Length: 210
Ligand SMILES: [Zn+2]
Figure (cartoon, rainbow, N blue to C red):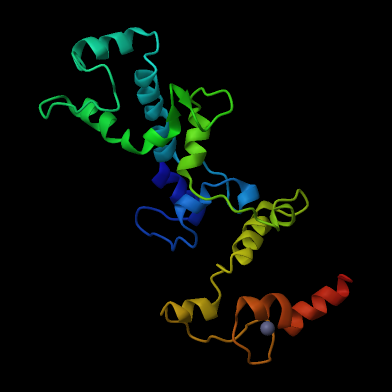
């Protein structure tokens, strides 16, 4: 599912993959943090599975928890120190393999990432996305005036990720001519040139009285 979303964002197809200009993990962060707020199915799945660990740690009252304690954890009442037998099923070993990073999130049966101490899949998911620096220009990029395509271009420009000729040359992708094609100033087509220096851009800004 994540791959299909990635392909959609960058216009890739199975036969022809396009360059991913921004990492998928960054794209999945909220818009106010400079991303597209696309849900990462992989990370959401991990956050959801971790809820099972939390239910085991707090001995939630459910048939599945009672069944797990009766079948897999006989004689071992603490999920945090439980070591699954090597011959146990794949699911049980996998479930136990993801619990090590969760130990800092629990304190005497409460979940540290939420105010009420209860497990939250969405809060756990956000923590999996990593650092969340604010994007100062978020309101400028994600406004209702621009067309979606233009928002996407400004979003890329804000990160200096536009695929200009200058950038193509920098990553060793051959181009016929690295010069700007909208003016005749014989200047390299860089993001800085296109948005600020190009005479065509300056003329357009003057006409729009910007
Ligand atoms: Zn130009």
